[in-house]
Length: 602
Image (cartoon, rainbow, N blue to C red; front, side, top):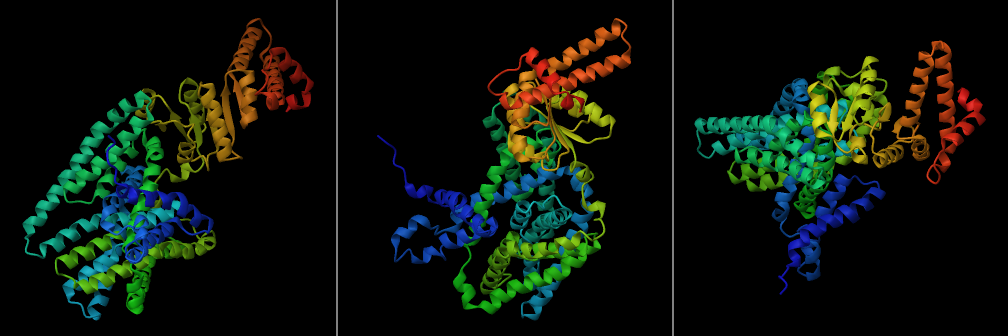
């Protein structure tokens, strides 16, 4: 007997997948931001969109989400995944470099915005305690939407992205004592606050200690299996375990995920973890944005447009006026400072939390909290548009002085022009030593976890992963790399990598290790800039050794070896168009090379 399956149980999943697979690509063709697209989908399928017509048209129930709380847990996972990915990009060392921005600019923004917005709320007639709560709620910005917009626009790694993240990180940290303080208003004591703070500190300390001790052995054992499924399971385990651990201590799940990412950022598995988690992050963050849209009621905006729209505009303008000068004070040029103000000016998801909790505790009248929630939601929906407006200042930025180096982690500039080494065996290590001798920065990827662990202990920038996956190529910076050097031994893997790298970047310098002349010709055919066959190089070295040992002067030997190498390379390149259908014989290589002496002379 077949088990009964309730189709309605899969309705939310089908709606989210339809949005990601059908609606968002359509918005992309219309040049609508995917962030705004997901919000619009939420508005359309929510109780205040098509849900209003369910009574008259019952079939609409199949494509609507009547209860926003039904997808709330999954929506929160989107923010959790986002913060985990941010942690992977940072590491504790980078976070320490950014401490001036986090605890300087971040604290200044929260304090100034809260005070000014609270003053305006007092002028509007709210009691001081309620006004302060409303001011703090308005001071919060949207971590999920701002970071997603910057990520889509490829600006998360810029100085603007670092500044925005620093402010958002401080806001995420500040929300914990804010919620505790609101809870104390119902009759708690200072001891409750201290105990909660102690519990939070112990939880964070335990996560850091366990992560430092256990993450590398865990991922090394999983990597040895060579199973992508097990590696994915390990990644999700770290994300969820760290998030749940902080949630059980009264902190946000997002903060725990951030700590988990920071712990993994310093390991050799960071790049492969990024590639594994990225699809989950994008889809789950889409669920969060849909959840934001579900709670938006256009009729309530139409009922009081001056209050709701005016409140959203006033919120953005006040925070813009405060954030832009503060960012300029901390070293950001005026055009980027204005962009930071436009991105951080709208409200955020933690503003929803503060307003909801304050209304439950009686610190805010429900009518005021509801109006404020609508204004915050409106401002969040405008973030993609505000970002687009701010980007118009980018051409002016090119004529500005250099950004304060303290705004960027120490290795950001170097990472812009690194050589990528695919494989770090004996050949890869030799190439790396030569690059280091000439002070050329590089990053290496290898699939042997034990080798990677060993060389990383020596301080070499090597990561574990499968570099034949295009997503990992992008993660290690193929878009800005000076060259890709392929030293792997597997013929199929080398072919896949050269093909993928050439598709990613047509102008990339690709130097590949080939097994023999026929393989080298094939690599030229699929896109290698230069291919070095092992058998040819070995024969040339043997020839050089025998000529020198029997007494031929070194000068003529070097000249003849170079001429022979050039002739063979020319023959291989000439045969490249036919490399996939016929092998190269040694006699044909020699004949073809000597028939193209102009090319050999080059």
